[in-house]
Length: 226
Image (cartoon, rainbow, N blue to C red; front, side, top):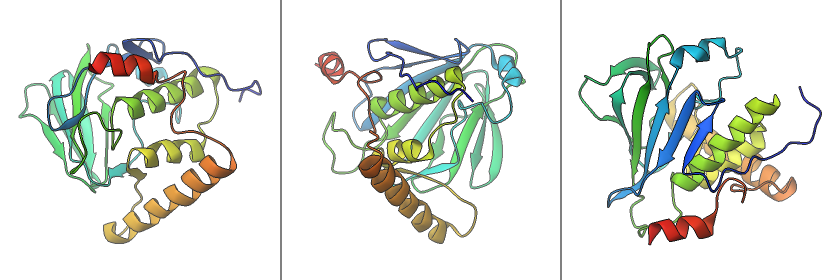
């Protein structure tokens, strides 16, 4: 593990985010009414991920759940594997779309790294009930840009991601890590861990932030929304 100070790569001004040295690119477009985000994510060379050392593939989200938002995945190219409440389902572009993940359901997804050729998925989520357009609530481009670039910086610098940092970012987007066990109980446990380890320890004690200017330019993004 590197002993050099952690450096944040300035990506806030980029329209297209590159990750893992170009294996994946991600961009965001203005979401339709009633949605908080619309992300277009392309893994150009899935088989290259087989070369990534075990435990270093941060492109696969950790098992997690959203407090209030339903999330939708539209596979337009290639093949992905979705895990919902412990059950894996492989979805190709020719299958019925979209894949809907209900709020509070424990889930993750990953590109099928045995697929030859690019894989593309569009990710959206329902806006949080009662929120206004462009309000910073739930998962949105700001959250994804911060957590994706942070994890990519960890990969490039051979630094283990900070658990308090990840929990703080997730908590800011009304997301919690998911654990096995009774769903009603584990939701309470994982939410509490986000508060104590993410907000209190990470945010208040360590001085970590849920968003960094290197990763998100609020002024620029405001202009794009006009």
